[in-house]
Image (cartoon, rainbow, N blue to C red):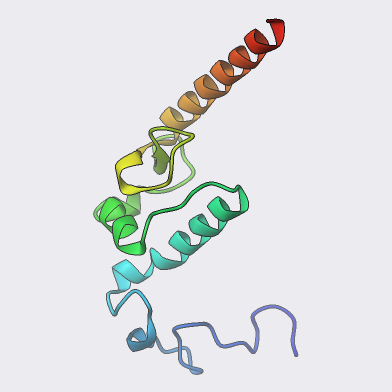
Length: 123
């Protein structure tokens, strides 16, 4: 068997490379389909980090619908984050913010957590 993806059939595609939307779990909408694998990856990451995940694909699609093209790695691109970092990943606890805002919030959260640990240790 050759190394890499050569010689392998990609999911959702015919052996000739043709798309097969009738077999997609997300439905036949290509815009919706491109969100399915990132949703699975995010769900797997939450499982790995032992975070609670209660966000079905339909809710994920509702959140990102219309904003999907604004995702990215630049500071002004959007990312999905929890409003309460210790809460569950669910529709009521999620918002889309820029990556710059997310980094600022994470830094504040980590500083506050560190401060609380130091206060608890000094008692």
